[in-house]
Image 1 (cartoon, helix red, strand yellow):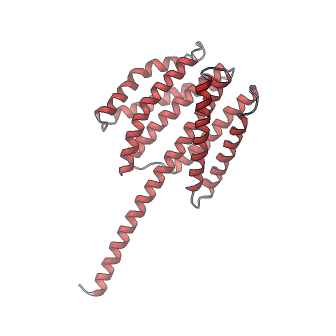
Image 2 (cartoon, rainbow, N blue to C red):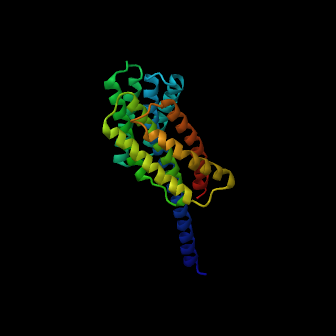
Image 3 (cartoon, rainbow, N blue to C red):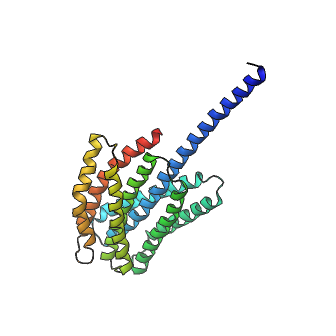
Length: 261
């Protein structure tokens, strides 16, 4: 082979290797950013849920602990999203907005509770959700495992969302739109669960969690949808915790699988 041809082949091989490496890096970055944005979504609902449980003095110690932990996770996740925004002006602006909203939430914790503060808490949680959802959409995972990871993290978000609207209703926020949002979250959870049930790659140990979710979900669903008739905030909280424990098993599995690709 002539010198020029060898040089050309070497250059082509280097470019192919370099491009493949860059592609893998970009995919891992997208996966990390997706997981971080989804965590902001989950925290946005969990903080509001815990806030109302604390103010109603229902499982107040657990609620206070959950709220502090989630605020800390939220701050760390927002910082990570800001650091990973690159040159995207839109992502940088969303990061600044999320950081501002986190600050507002944090300052609310030392203020007396009233109806206006409760309404602001719901608004802030929805603002955080909108910003995080927009960022998650920009880093949507590629491939089946990344897609399934997003699905199970969405299930965690939906459980927190349902519980948030349930306890907010018990705190006096009985606006019909809040009930509609709760019912929509229940419906969306069922759609996500159907995707989990259609996935064929779970090992036996993880299949046990899928089975447990399917067995308990119909019971929890009735508690959630009884928001206008019943007052069962402790049972609803316990139901949410039980389901989340099983869903997190699926999350760990898909996180491992997605990270391999």
